[in-house]
Length: 271
Image (cartoon, rainbow, N blue to C red; front, top):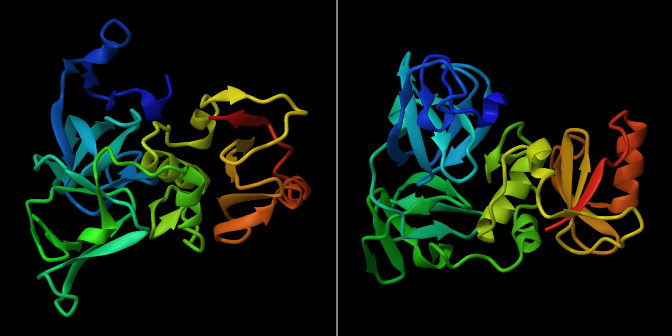
């Protein structure tokens, strides 16, 4: 079983594993992420595998050492987060559609910022004062929000809005992204489901033949890496070569990755 997608903490399993594992079972507790950004860890206090954004729906399966073991509702990814990062909260009504925004203490740009939210974070808007949306955390510019369900039309344009974002292994936010994090945040912003890691993303869409011309939005895979096609000549990816989200000529990227020991293209898929 793949630990990333198997909701078993090592002590307690989700009821979806009934008959597959010898462990106590639970339906878990429905909850959501209550902080702007949190690392999803391999174990309590362990290494980051992915990150979760404010408002993400999750199921808490176990608690241990001040951490909660959870399964995400959107992609089924499992892992540990500090226990205080999740709990009950108001249902999100809007999502951040700009690369990032601040939460302010009042409905004025001169007031102190309380936190920063990344593209994809979800908030509950409880009111509006002029051009400011009021949330339980504070005030957010209305122009940085869209209602949940009002998704972006072009995931590639979303990815391009994140150009220059620093590379971060396991990153899922404007503060830092890796290759699969960029693909996931872009597709989620377009209302499309997407797994968390590049090997899992290879099931998306359908396989292209070797001689099929690439088009905008196609995905190109290597062993442990993924990029999005921008046009006939370019792709966009978060990569350790540029240490950021960057455009690169497609042929140049393929040749560079091969020359650096990263291998050849393993798959090309169309969503």
